[in-house]
Image 1 (tube, rainbow, N blue to C red):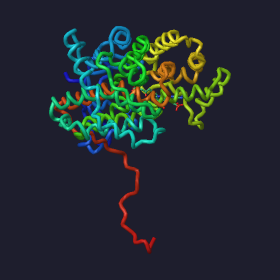
Image 2 (cartoon, rainbow, N blue to C red):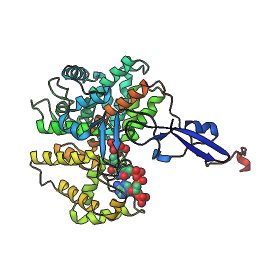
Image 3 (spheres, rainbow, N blue to C red):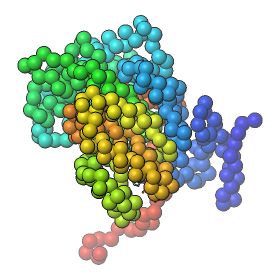
Length: 427
Ligand code: SDX
């Protein structure tokens, strides 16, 4: 017996099918409602499942995050970012041969077309790196014409590899351009995270390699940020992709959506907030501001649309933060101490407890990145770098669905009713 919901309104009774997934809440299929002359209404999509997906599962009440069924804690501890990329894109962990082939293919696409260098010189040196990322990633579609046909699976796969491979190169170029240093080419004998730190911090006049512990921490940060179900930027990528837009344009749209401080821009905002708080003695004042409805200030790095328990990524991030600060001899880092105290005070405050506001992935990531030597304005760039694989996995999943169609929400119209034009000399 198929499950159904019965909706009664006006003089109508409508039976709506209910579907169950492998995990998580059931969904009520409301697609028939438009033929009954009504729409659902859900600004912010709080209660709306926009699609069917098998990539990532979140249980916000229990603080659970699974990539293709594997708990994020296990992947962060035992896997590496490129293996997680394989898992997200293909649905299974690779065997040794598959892993090597995948890694070799990523390595072969890390260079960008040499002419792309000219795009950077059009930006001011003090441009926010996210502005440069949006522009340069979107411009990839001006070069790679042999991976633009979204209806061709070979094109889609080639675009996925190009994006995963080139996004660290472009991200590092954004940083180098902002500090006036020469771009550093990727090295094929380095791991993904090691190569990124190399392109970020090496200079042509020295032959150095990144600190292996920092490379491991960077790799873990990439894993923790790789995907997160239908968040704002992933939904943006899906919406852009539903029109048939090319993959590079869709990822540029995702980067734009991620930039906001309510989303991926929060890690940069956390560091700015900790800098503004300055000292443990000021914490109470800022907690008060965060609770004041007349004050737009919010405690950045706290709260989440889905997690009403600890963000499991924040727990892993906090441990990694300890490791990195110990390794760098910065265990007395005042920012980290301030963050720990802010977290303790907030978690004992009724306002945060009642609203189930816990630290999210962004609360500790910025402290690690700053300790590694990455400037605040690059934090969201690194989030975008890691999330590119998640965006591409969802974009590919959408294109592989026979049910794919253009996404086109409706509205509750509250504007002027029909009226006739009035000539300007009669107004
Ligand atoms: C990410 O979606 C994802 O999965 C995103 C992400 C991913 O991996 O893709 O997890 C990454 O974006 C993490 C979130 C990073 N953003 C921040 O840290 C910014 C600070 N957080 C808030 O802006 C907020 O918590 C959101 C945006 C994250 C969630 O907003 P919601 O779900 O719309 O929640 P809400 O605004 O309705 O808040 C519910 C209540 C409100 O109070 P009341 O009106 O009920 O009295 O909680 C309050 C809010 O005022 N509240 C906060 C708060 N977050 C929510 N009050 C103070 N400080 C905060 N941080």
